[in-house]
Length: 162
Image 1 (tube, one colour):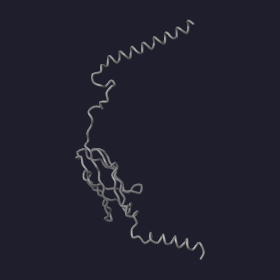
Image 2 (tube, helix red, strand yellow):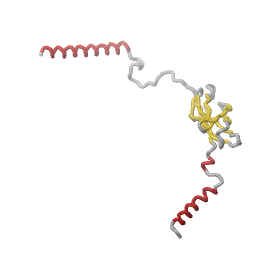
Image 3 (tube, helix red, strand yellow):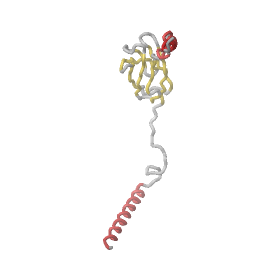
C-alpha cells in the first residue's frame, strides 16, 4: 500500500461520524433570542436579537412587560428595539421567541426599579460639602492670588536692581 492511502482512509474515518450525526450542536443553537441589555431600568429601551432557521421571515417575541413584538430580518438576524414601559414593576420576565416553523427559544429580561438620585454622593471635602462657607473659600482664593502677584512683582524688581 502506498503511504497516501492510509492517510486518506484516516481522513475518511474521521469525516464519516460528522456526516452521520442527525443534528450537530451548531445547528441546534441556530434558534435563539437575546435581550440587550438583559438588565434594564423601567422606561429604558432594549434591543431584541433573535434567530430562527430561516432569518428571512419575521417572527414573534412575547415578553411580559413588552407584550408581543415582531422581530424583522436585519443584518442576518431578526431584530427589534422597544422601550420597557416606565410603569413596569421590577422583576424577572420571561422572553419567548416563536419562529414561523414552530420552534421556540427563551431568555429572561431583568427589570430594575427606576430610581433617580436626589443629590450627589457624599464624598466629603469640596465646596459642595454641607457647612462650608463659600465667601470664606472665595476670600482665601483671592488672598492666595494677591500673594502670588506680590511675589512675582518683587522677583521682577530684584532682577532690575542687580
